[in-house]
Length: 55
Image (cartoon, rainbow, N blue to C red; front, side, top):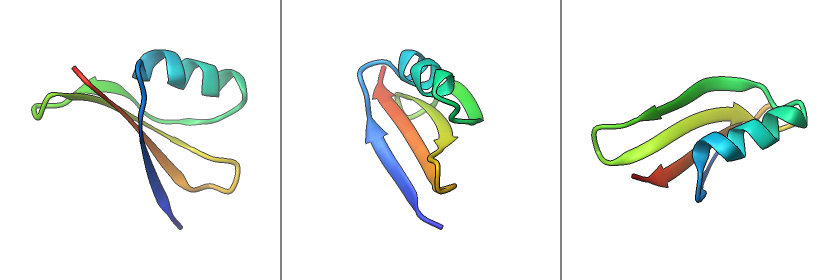
């Protein structure tokens, strides 16, 4: 399995859009102590996709 990381403008919005396409939510968006908001989902092949945005 592969993990892919992407910086996006809005983690919550991006995860919501991906969810409408059927992408599962692995972890809900959460603010991290290092100053990023992070969420996790999976692509159609099952690879972990990490979404991040600077707070």
